[in-house]
Image 1 (cartoon, one colour):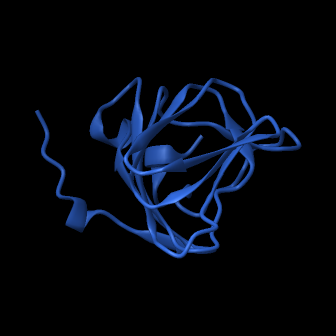
Image 2 (cartoon, rainbow, N blue to C red):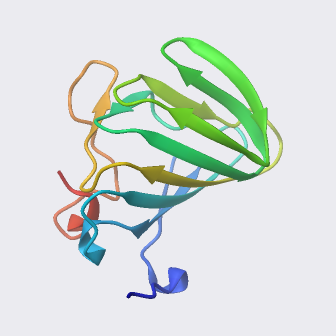
Length: 133
């Protein structure tokens, strides 16, 4: 059993998104990865796809989920489901910070840009192998 102090985890801020990887391969996991993200007003996740299923718990705020060109509005509290391999993005067009916990069905996680090339995320680096692939 492991206890992870969220305050001790490295945090990354880029383009209006504040990110922490809460649990991943670095913690001995083999099948899931968990992220904690804040999306500030006007921010959006990159349009991308993953090699696994994605479940997003929306704890605060409201926004839009785009999957394969179709957009749905949502407001907390709710759960967003993104099937494996679907092109998706989450946007915060509102005036409040959006709080998300995301669970992926793989670790390390592979993320691909809309053009199919591997997506480089700032928290994936040689110094942070938890989510490097």
